[in-house]
Image (cartoon, rainbow, N blue to C red; front, side, top):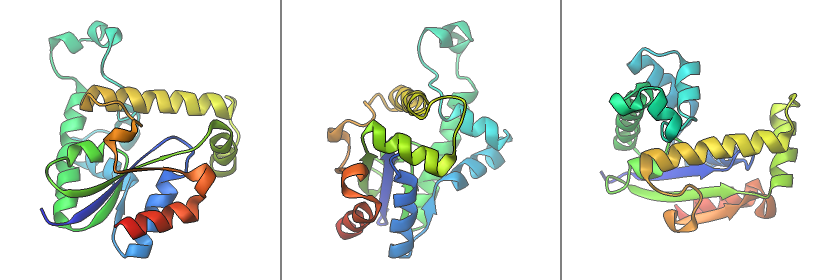
Length: 191
C-alpha cells in the first residue's frame, strides 16, 4: 500500500479530532472518525451507539472472565475485527487521516503512516470540553479521567501497547502549549 496515512491518537479534550479534520481539509484528503463507527455498525448489524460504547471499553481484566470472555470471543472482539478490516480498506483507498480506533496499530506494516499523539494538560482539556461539549453533572476533570482510562485500557487490550507512550508514535504534540492551529501546521509539514 503506497498511500500516506496520518493516524491521530489523542487524549480526551486535547482537540485531536479537530486537528485531524483540519489537517485533512488543508491537505485535501478525507478524515475518518465517526464515519468508521457508522460503517462498523452497518457491517456488523449493531447499533452505532453500541459500537461506540463497546469501542471505548476494554474487554480485558477480571470482569471479562466473569462475563464469559474465558469461553471465547465476545461482541467487542467481533467489532474489533470488523474495525480492522474497515481501517485497512480506507487506507487502501487513498491518503487519509484516521482519528482514533487504534489505527496506528492496525496499519503497522501495512501502510506508510505518520503516527501522531495529541495531548494537553488537564486544565486545558477540562476548559476545552466544557466549551465544546457543555456542562454535565460530572466534573470535566472526572469525565476526562474516565474517558482516557477507557481509551488506554481498550488500546492496551487490543494492541498490547501502552497508549500515549511517546515511543509508539512518530510525534507527540501538546495542543495546550502549541495551540490547535500550530499542531495542524506541524502535522501538515511532516506529511
